[in-house]
Length: 176
Image (cartoon, rainbow, N blue to C red; front, top):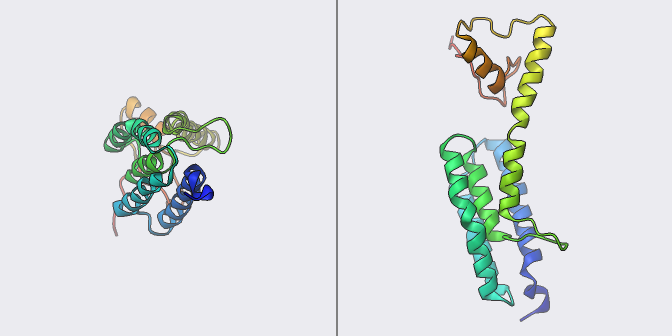
């Protein structure tokens, strides 16, 4: 087979990057990505493995990488991930299961564990925003007559946005 096609790992990384870049653009533009998008890229990634010089080994690597699929689906169903995030992670596991351009591969497990670590950043940002707002004298709980536990949860999960265009409101909005 062609030597340039024999190293399908580099092609897989390029395909995965293309999928993620285009997916990000669609997400910002439409705020929704159809599941067929991820299925299409995963299918192309699966077909790409047949360019490999060590087919059985690479099929086993994809199978091993797909162990993260149930975890990604579970996190999506629990509301900890968006559907596009879960399906993108699964598609990347098929397209580039051991992505590397050096000696240190990045596995889907690495991506999932990094996601879990980065998951706490929005909570920390919300706490900082809410503390700063309270220091400035803003009443962040205006119209929120709930228990202290619910106020703590609200302070962790969100903040009072002045322009919530790209955010999900944590308070009730009234239509005029």
